[in-house]
Image 1: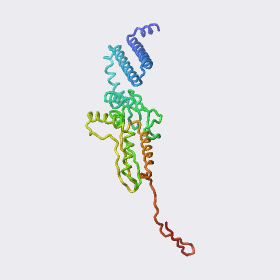
Image 2: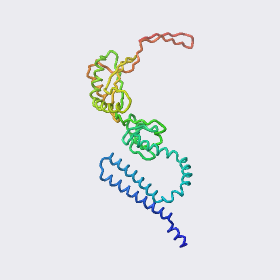
Image 3: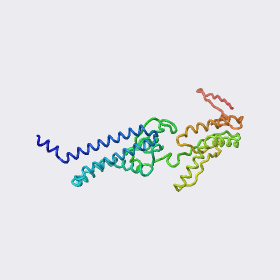
Image 4: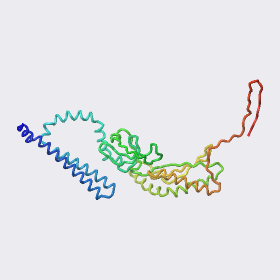
Length: 309
């Protein structure tokens, strides 16, 4: 028994395993200490997040190099076994490998960054963390209207960047085009109605347009795309019910609902000041005339009644 214990204690392979485990534990402890120091001394949330990710990645890299160095003399002996086992592992963990490849694509390809609003794997939300296997989103929408948070935190596999389109609402152009429709009654002063809507749009979203013009010029320089108009614009069509004014405007991707609320409120306030020169339309049903009604009674007599409005 003593000989067996002595054999294990002085076995070089056992010594390497123990050294690798101790080294890994020391590296993990150093990573955690660095995370706590960053949380204490770095106040900017974005900088702190990126530094924590960098420290974690470097720690894992050092651990891998350290363990490889410890077992360097033994790696050649296990090369064939590792090759056979690696093929089986690759087949069994193909989804995990695809997620790691997706993480590399996201990190190097600029698909999205923390803080961006994206749609990935059918889930829309703000990116709050990018891990090696999964991207974590604070979800928007679903049972909550517009683009507001619903409170769910969703983790989506990084492999979805290869399977489905990745919609980014804020990467190169942090604005969205949006529209509202204002129905105006026939007989209203449509020139005045257009002027009111345009004036309110310039007042509410005019600053967005100025900032969006600068951002759009950067997009035009980077991509093969036309120079689109970003200033608020009012168009008119006439249908069988009303005059339909459509306001197209650029807005911050996180402020769509609040901006629509302010636009409608200001437009209605200005319309109220026109003394009925402009009126908001609504669907109505006008009955001009009723056809004569005939009612037959069981005994064969006929009762005729005519009415009209």
